[in-house]
Amino acid sequence: MTSWQEEIKNSITTSKGLCRELDCNEPDIASVSNLYPVRISPYYLELIKKEGAPLFRQAVPDKREMDDPQGLIDPLGEENLSPVPNLVHKYPDRALLLVCSECAMYCRFCTRKRKVGKAEMAITDKTIAAGLDYLRATPAIREVLISGGDPLLLTDQRLEDILKRLKKIRTIEVIRIGTRVPCTLPMRVTPELAAMLKKYHPLYINTHFNHPAEITPQAAHACNLLADAGIPLGCQTVLLRGVNDSPEVIRDLMCRLLQIRVKPYYLFQADLTRGTGHFRTSINTGLLIMKSLIGSVSGMAVPTYALDAPGGKGKIPLTPDYITSLGDTLKFVNYQDLPCSYPNTVHGVQFKV
Ligand SMILES: *Cc1c(COP(=O)(O)O)cnc(C)c1O
Ligand code: SF4
Image 1 (cartoon, rainbow, N blue to C red):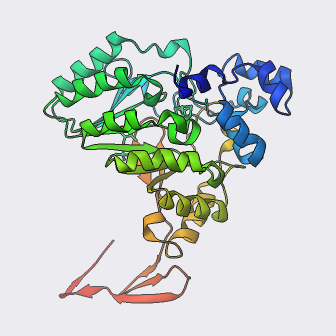
Image 2 (image 1 turned 30 degrees about the vertical axis):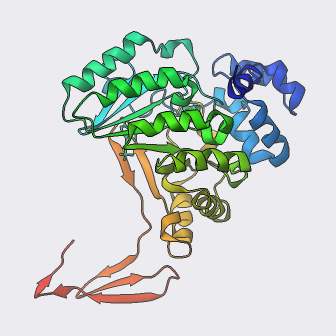
């Protein structure tokens, strides 16, 4: 057994196990974990002990998960957008293929909370084959996002088998893997894994860090191995109340991601997922955080703040407003809120909105 498989084997998955290690109310945890699974690896447990609340809240069940009547079971309407089970086809030219129902950690705020880590998710050789058939039959799809669960919880061999079959589909130009493993189980990223992935370029990986305390030497090493294999790395952070909903924390996170060769890609407004209401922030909080980033840090550290619209209508970028008036002269404020302007008539044509 490899070290990452040992980590999974030694992970906490029960309320008893959890309350032996961390300060929590066992009956509360038990009632939540009956519905939504728990998994915390020894690696992440140590980080929680060292760093406290922002990491604790991401991993440890909260009884508020059971009381969220506003929440939607399938907030992005994924099941309706699945022509075959475990393949989501929302945009014309890209599709999401779910290849693994497990994760290294079950994040309490997960959008696929309804099924991740549960028997209902039922990913089998048959569902993967059906997904690949659909991709072969749909040449408009140029990019496949491999997700789950977490694809990097598959063995190298199983993952390679899927990549090999994808690679044979001529109409697929790019493969993208979504994984939280560099953050939650960095020892999973081995030189062997990186060498295998390297054969399937152009391959991109989007990972998922939510707090600067998650950027450990081990996480940096994992990202380094992937980047050295020529894999461009992005990050999809979720804006979470009590975890990272402040300009200082997000700024620190984004700058540290760049240092470990990860380009911030999206900052997501929390989805309306049932059982995650206590994590939600207002959109205004997100806009103020974006305002504090833009111009004051490297442009490369600035992600796109986006809302994944309920019902599967797609991602909507949310940007602070810099235009203050649209008369003969366009008026703006800059990143420091200083006024500036630009003529609204260029080559005799006036812009209208
Ligand atoms: C987010 C998402 C994508 C990818 O969107 P990008 O903006 O290209 O990152 C594709 N398919 C589904 C179903 C998605 O939810
Ligand atoms: S790693 Fe991703 S898919 Fe898995 S529980 Fe966390 S957010 Fe959900």
